[in-house]
Length: 358
Image (tube, rainbow, N blue to C red; front, side, top):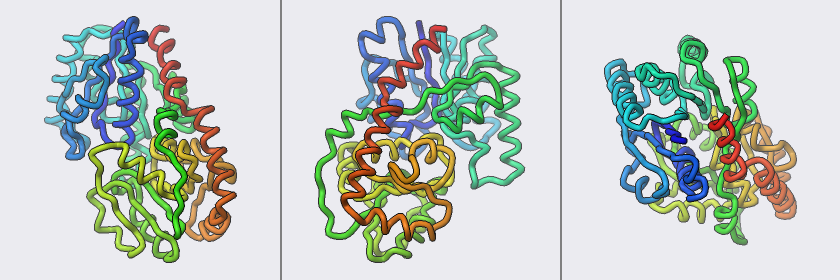
């Protein structure tokens, strides 16, 4: 069986997801029955195509096709034609599209093949849930998602529980949660003592991650240290003197070392699919504070593995609770346990196989 995965941007958590996917499906036992290709775009500045080819498994084929994130009629048409040409050469049995942009371009490209294919689509966070766009644009994105599903068919594979509930309202759907390489992450975890309580976040400094809120929290709690593991275009919005920005790391292990050195992980996102960084923090036994949104609330169990919050004022109580080291350890143990139960990459990638073979 030939399976092709199509994704617009292999960056951040998506990079980790696809790297893990490449090694799972590139394994000789799985590869004996499922031949896997990943088609991606290297247009974003944070994507290094050479690094992707070096890091990903040799058991999968990597093909680069130009795609852009924002709507561009001419560029999108060119991308769809290039994508259709690649799919025609590969002649796959299954096509799995990831993210909204690849979902639109991929389904149109499949239509251009004039041959019925088994198509799956994982939103990794529906575009109509974004809060940086107008209500009118949200309605347009909803209509596109609903219309493309009805027009081109296929099945949605949601990456999280709430995404699954939304997907069922749009059409045929299944649930396969995101997962991480738990053993790899836990092996990078070690005892670490901070003199000052340290709170961290990992990822690109973008509107979606809400750096303004992160900065406001740091200003509200000047006695704590804060770390942003990563970098991004909205770096100037982070001005609090007790925030350290690490910048990007060439090696993932360096980022995990920084993650290990925090006491509490905080996710200030405005919207999410199902955040890989939060899962990695949980695997390192870090209690998590997270905004009460889709994606975050599918991972964090309130008052057990961390806390979900709607307003910044709620953090007074949550920080007071988590200042206690013993409490953090209890929360952290439960966080790792939840990861093992629901977010193990091998368990979850295995669930894709019967869907492809069905």
